[in-house]
Image 1 (tube, rainbow, N blue to C red):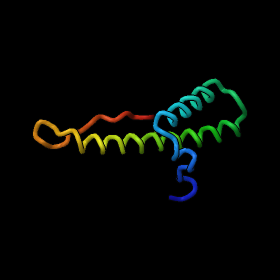
Image 2: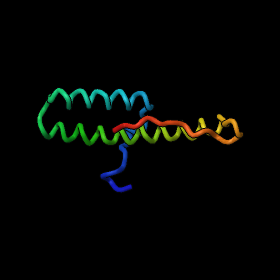
Image 3: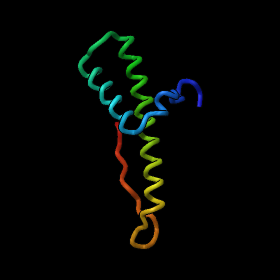
Image 4: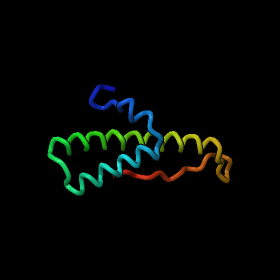
Length: 85
């Protein structure tokens, strides 16, 4: 991945819950209109990275669950995933 799409190492180390909490705080700050434009842009970029990290964590969890949760026909059931949009 190029530098603009790479998830920073500090975000990669976060659990899903930690990343989601940070993302929620960024959303609150942006909704409140706190700070200046440059700060909002930086917060938005970090929020985008946190969102992608959360999505990756959910996909990992879904893959693990599908391996251990057989459906009625013996095949893994398709699980619904949360959408962050």
